[in-house]
Length: 249
Image 1 (spheres, helix red, strand yellow):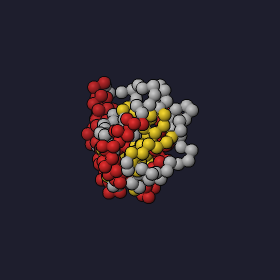
Image 2: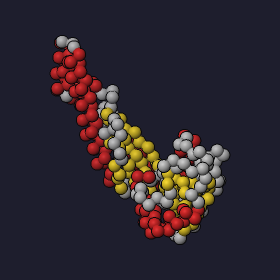
Image 3: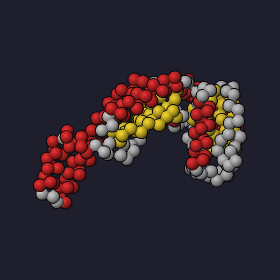
Image 4: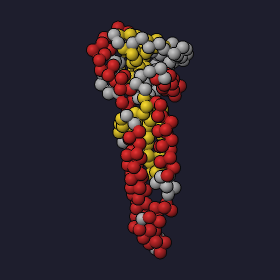
């Protein structure tokens, strides 16, 4: 990991005035400035020595991006992006200027919401009521308790919970997708039946949240919904072409 350099938070249109008092990672928090290159600019600070993914710095990074996004589109960098110096950063920004501008136009006026859905774990009664196979296995365990019978029952209940959650997750995706500009499927997460991010107009963010929460309420006996947002639009920025390297890489 470099002991010096510049920490890169985001790319914004050139000429964007940064919010007053904006600070970034490090202790004390680093002063933030912009480095223009053509029609875009990188938002940076001095890179703190021995940078680590501490909660304080992770939150500072995200809060800075959210404050920037209040004033216009932001192409966010992941936590820990460090360039050797400003000249190196400009050299990396220059050939991607047109691409960065296209992404900024796409993200203009938008925020990201992430939706994760997991099988509801307190829904045994409704599973037994709906699933004949589970009901038969439960009755068999009551008549003749034993390890094998209990194991089969547990497996059947787990499969039924996941199947019900998958169905509910698909419905949520179908209903939420029309409310967003774009949808990005996230990586597989253990225990999740759905991990998706939605690019939502900032003006519609309250309505999107309300719709997701209402679907969670209606389907609470099938799925547990975890909703995060508004967030910086990480999921709608291509990984290639980022103008730095990750600290520690």
